[in-house]
Length: 281
Image (cartoon, rainbow, N blue to C red; front, side, top):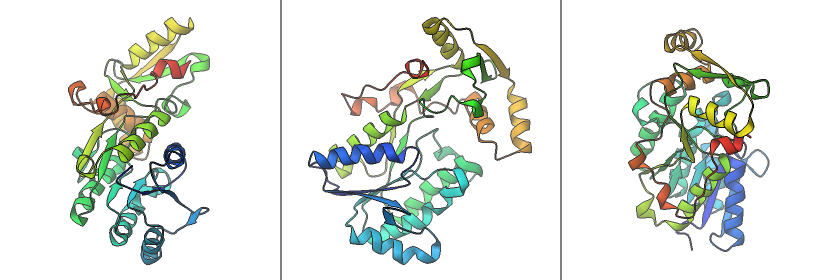
């Protein structure tokens, strides 16, 4: 049985729905006792600062002892994580999983933008004394390669930053969910509290992806390479351009979750994540 009997998920959309499914499977197997989804529809909550008492009561009344935040950077949803953390702490929640699930952000603490916001929040959890488990996964390989990133793969048009030779870690959302729920339901608190997990389903440069896709499908891709200074200038003009922010961070070697010898994939021996190319085709 898991040390955490009731696990809540805040934000049941993009990644959250995959984590909820895995938690429900764990509940059906008798590994945990309950799953709580914090949303406007299932367990109705407000993340407004003035509603913190109501949010605290919702968590306490369901006996939540671990909380996974999958709140998105979109619509500034990440800004409510501090309210959620304070409510969780007051409600007796014993473990908080912040909405990371991407590039490492701890080194951006004190900065601005999405990465800075996430890095700063890790510090807030420490100040609050609410134990956390952080999961760095790289971008979602089943979702990232879309038009917003300059990928129109059907017509052979793709983009890469600089020369396309910098590696990036990728993990599909289903595989992220499997690993997170496995960790939460099998590891003792001592192995989870204040721990950073670095996992990846695949590690490839853009040029490696282009070549592998062409070999597997026989289709020709026509890459457009974006110089680092062009990415920086675009982002300077529009700091909210998430695609260019990602591409620039990757060019600057911020796209891997860590060194290969730092990976925690082995913590889940039966984990068999999908490769990027298999997902692309």
